[in-house]
Amino acid sequence: MNKSCILLFSGGLDSILAFHLLKPQGIDIMLLRFITPFFNPKLKNFPKDSNYKEIELGQDYLEVIKKPKHGYGKNLNPCIDCKIFMLKKAKEIMKKEGFGFIATGEVLGQRPMSQKKDTFRLMEKEAGLSGLIVRSLSAKLLAETLPEKEGLVDRNKLLDIQGRSRKVQFSLAESLGIKNYFTPSGGCLLTDPGFSARLKDLIDTQGDFSLYDIELLKLGRHFRLSKKKKFVVSRSEKEALGLLKLNYQGIVIKPKENSWIVGVAQEGADITEALSVFGHYARKALRKKRFCVELISKGKKETKDIECSDSLAIKPL
Image (tube, rainbow, N blue to C red):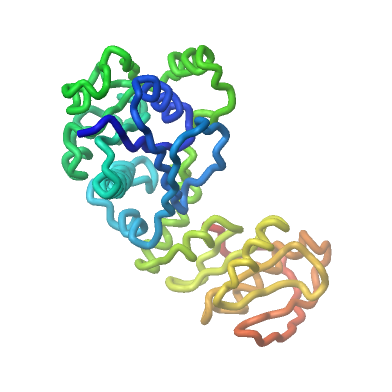
């Protein structure tokens, strides 16, 4: 084992502090950041002169979301399975590029599902990394790792933080002059109740889905027209542009006159019902009850006059 490691790096304060605890010990560190469809904030702070790699997780990662071996958290967050998946990816790089061990910014007791002693051991075992993960911020509360036993990491220079409070981290950040970092929060869309409800609907009705379907879940109001067909209406000009940029493979509905409101329906959806929903929201945008819309599908366009009703028959997901 050599004095080098891969540090799983989110860009949050904990992972930044983990870097600052290990780097002064002469450890060669590569920061590894995973980009997921559910969590990809722009980095606010980045250790200077560091080796950095990003990996964008794709369709194979979605399989973890569909059927997590260790279940979901409060919403549709399979935190344990997600972390195991990332640790396995990190292990592949560690073996291929010759790094000695893995490090993280995890804090014991900070997350109720994935940051417990028994869960740490479980994740290490399933990832094939038992004894090879240094959790710098809570190391003194955990079993000694192989890098510590071999003298590659000085345990006395690591910390014993636990729990949800961030007072120790804030104080340490101030002493190190670290000022620009993410505000502590979940951040992942899978912990958001609204997004999770949409994703559960997708899993229950469609079963199989792609990265495209996930991107669609992030935009607009979603309506289930039937068990297999859905309709989405933008809530802003930004969302309207986002829906059009996705190059939706269904039916696009938009007013003939300029407006930020756009609707997209899956191929085969009940267009009458979709138009009823669209009209309810377009009426507010256009400030009129009767207007002409364009229906665009597979390069073909037709126009239709619609009259909006005051009520909405179905509720958004």
